[in-house]
Image (cartoon, rainbow, N blue to C red; front, side, top):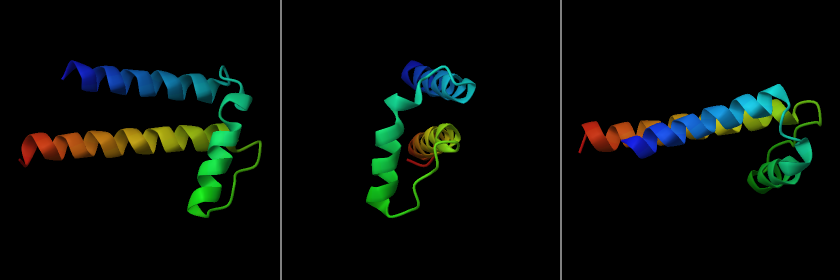
Length: 75
């Protein structure tokens, strides 16, 4: 349980730092462009890049939390 709380806290702090512009875009620019190119969707512009990363991180957080909730309460 502590690991889940720690994971959520780390992702939320990461999203806050990215959204506030503390993380420089050169750290995640090529990763996001490669991710979008791999799955075949339009790559974001430089202006949209920061918020696209926040959306990806929050989506991953919700998916992981949903899967863990299913494992705990269904099985």
